[in-house]
Image (cartoon, rainbow, N blue to C red):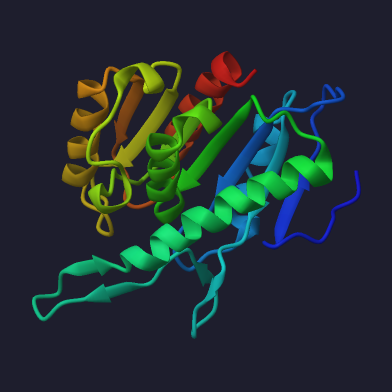
Length: 220
């Protein structure tokens, strides 16, 4: 399969079990990273999905890329640039449509795998447009209330399956934020598997093993 020029730079790995309409697994990296980061997982998750890893649109001055900028208040608190986050959500939706057109993927079978910022946006996309997604793998992220609906219809979310993980020593996004998001998902009665690991802001081997196991069960 030849990589095509689309609105977001990306890497792609075709499905091992190729068929005419491959399901799509879209990877969304974290702040300061790029499309090659999560893509290193692709060969170990590759089954019948076309795996695409996208590069965020904002170029950071010190290198790397972001889906939205992060500012700090006078107390050292982090503030997300919400307009940029919402704009990136729109860019991702448009990019997914481009992927369908360019690579012939199955619009009825789209999953997201995000880390940190990418995880936050994966939650935002799935909870805002549940009809477009099937599975979500949310690594080291949380539910950002400013980019999800104020009210939900549970029946529209009933089909979603989510794997979420977080490090108990995460110094970037506190584990308490992840736990609060889990409460939201549980109240919505979404099918959720949540794990915590003795790690910082990242993915250790135990975490990846659980991701791989869960994906082999649900990534079809």
